[in-house]
Each structure stands twice: as structure tokens, then as C-alpha cells.
Image (cartoon, one colour):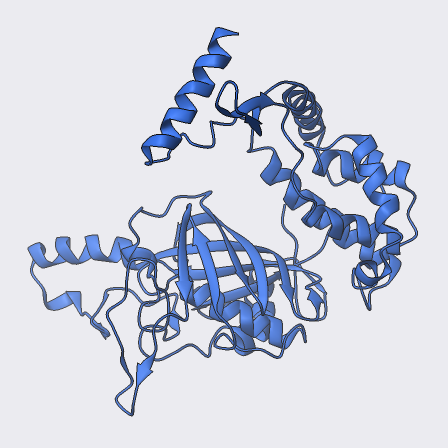
Length: 395
């Protein structure tokens, strides 16, 4: 169950309190949206078309039926969970819920709101226009910054491509190639910020009651951080532990078998590659988690048993131990992890990042690698591939 808090991290318990507590964040973060497609939309407003409210009382039954179909789309609220929110000055202490209208908002609105959150939390001084950035959603990548506006007319220098995203092409949810479905995920990356997000739900707009004012969209709510500050495995469920243990065994078998290819120079057989054991992936996000735990004066064994073994399911304990003690000597890298945070905050952040990494790893299974020239168009390279495969199949 998600616990919501206000800007002072005070728990909000009732529905009416949630609406009120979100106003503090929403007013500064999410209400200043651009005028072309992003005007704040009252939750109780329905039957909007071309910016005007339609009065159905004077329409006939046929028009009522047509407008009701449009209203079903206009009155849908999409709730996105924003996690791993990071700016130039560190990670946010909380995750966020952002509610948007399916018919009026798009992916660009999510980014715009997140940048306001980052600025409000003091995590960046950059704006959405400071650097190029990419955002993925449902396995498709969109890119910002490759179009620009010309002169006082602010016309765009070219029509948008299917991968462009900007103020002129905000990628409205109603216009995406694939209809919105719960569970669809995405990731934002750029020099100024990064975050992950997932579509948690699509619901009808709740009508305003007498006891509470109408909610306006975009609607932002800060989620209380319920992960403890202890080096314990209380952040992972028993079923997830079982999944991680089984998946780790699968990865061990994968790395011990000839499931990859290694380049060779064999003039006698004229082969280009031979089967070999896969190499472990490059250390990336794992170093952030390790660095936070090291800087919090945590011990490796306890950190492995309670945190790392569930997040690093494609790594062995011995490999992690070697990288852990190597990282302790890399002061140029280590000093930046969790800078300005207390030891408790570093542990909590490490567990939050570990949870996010674990969820991604559980969706990825080891797969035997194809020949490096499998998709080559050059005839000579394809001949090398056929020769290599023939040799492997013969042995």
C-alpha cells in the first residue's frame, strides 16, 4: 500500500487530505504547463471538445451517444509512478505519483513536471531545454532537441519525425502508436536528470464531492519512503527471494557454458569466431549501490546477504567481493556516492536502487548469443558465419 506525504513528509491518511496535500506540490510543480496543449484541466470537467465545454442538454439522442463515447476517452486519468529520480545534485528522497489526463497530456508533460520537481527539491538548476535528452516508453525511444523554432513566428524548422518529442510534438497519450496499458514502462536519460516511470493505472475521473474541491490535472503526489535505514532484507518479499535464487542459478549455468562467441585468428580453418563462455557485463549501476553502502560503513558480507544478492542476480558473490574492495580504493569515484547524505539515507537509497534493479533483472533471462555476423549483409562475412556454424555443429 502506498503512503502519501506532503512537502514536509507528513503522512496523508484520508482522500480529502491527499487532495489538499498534493496542492502544495502540484501548485509549484505541475500547474505551470505550456499553453498550447497543457492547460490545467479540472477533474470534474467533461465533454470537452476543441477547448469548449459542450452542453448536451440541447443535443439530440444521437449526439448524446457520440459525445458519450468521446467523454469516455476524455475522462480517463493515467497514473504514473516516478522512481529513481536523479538530478545533478543527487537523488530525490521520495518517489512520486503523477496523474495526467489521457486525452490532453503526453510524455513531454511527464518530463516537464519532473524537471519542476527537481528544481523544487534543489536537485538541479537546469531546465528542460538545457541539454539533449531521450525518453523511452513501451520499448520505443523518443529524442528531444533535434528540432528548433525559427524567428518571431516560432515555427519549427521541419515537421516532426516519429521519434521527435518537444513542445510542438508532446507525444499525447491518445496519439501513441500502441494504446496505453497498465504496466507499460519507460526511462528518461540526459545530462541534467534521469528517472524511471511506469503506468500504474488508468481510471475514470473522480467527480468532486461537497467535502473536497475538484482535483486539477496534472496532479502530483509525493510518496512516503517506507524503506528502512537498516541493512536488512525487509525490502524484498519471500516470493521475490525465491525468484532471485532460481534466476541466479540459471545465470551461473549460463556463464559456465559456451553460450557466446570469441574472435580467433585461424588461417588453417579460416574461422572467424569460436564458441566460448560469456563475459560478465560491465559494472555500471551496481557501483552506485556498492558505493552508497561502502560510504555508509557497511560490511560486505551483510550487504551481500541482505541487499546485493537480490539486486545482482547475474553476478557471483566472489565477483562482487572483488569489485567491492577494488571500489574502496577508487576514492575519485567513491567520494561522489551519496555525497551530502547521512549514513541512514545512503542505506535507504541503496535499497531503493537495489529494488528497482531487481525488478528489471527478474524480467531478463539469459539467452545464448547469436553469431556476431548473423545479421551481416556482406557476403564474405556471411561465409565466415556459415563456416563457423558448420564447424560447431560438426563438433
